[in-house]
Image (cartoon, rainbow, N blue to C red; front, top):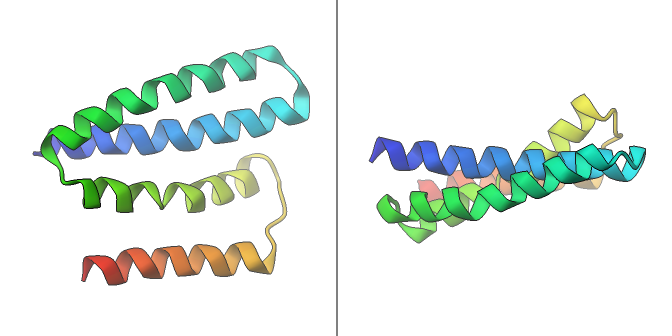
Length: 103
């Protein structure tokens, strides 16, 4: 079962990475970042499928909701993007929803 959580983590990392790479491509127009974006997004279904073999759909689905928060944080830290109050509030609500759902 532990390997399925590793697959889920890989799916989350590649989803987050793909979104951040695409944002960076949009800013720089360097095609290498577009290629890396495509590779990241191509890997996501594979790891999601592998995680679903051993985990229930509700666990996987709930975990994927945290990627929004990861992308916002990554955009802030890596791409120096500003966060609005609405984005911060939304992130808090997402985290609270995950916590409440899992209690």
